[in-house]
Length: 122
Image (cartoon, rainbow, N blue to C red; front, side, top):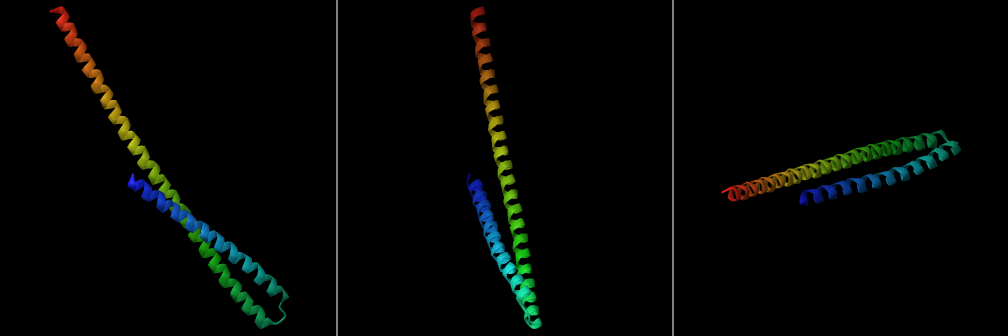
């Protein structure tokens, strides 16, 4: 149970980090759009070059954040699948234990009936 809670916490943290990255990427994309407008309005070539450089750096940051977001989401999915598998394994164990107990009870009932029949015949 503690393992499942730990996995759930890890999954929540990964999804939270992915959400934060998505927000940062969105903010950077807004800055990128503002830089693009500034580039279009700029008349000085050196200013345009500097703004293009800044825009390129922003684009690199956005791409990195988006890749990190994808990795975090994939990690969260992997954790979810692991939790599902653990739950399935636990349910399978419980089912097998219940079936074994049912068989034990059925065998016990058969033995009791057989003993009662033997007593009646005797």
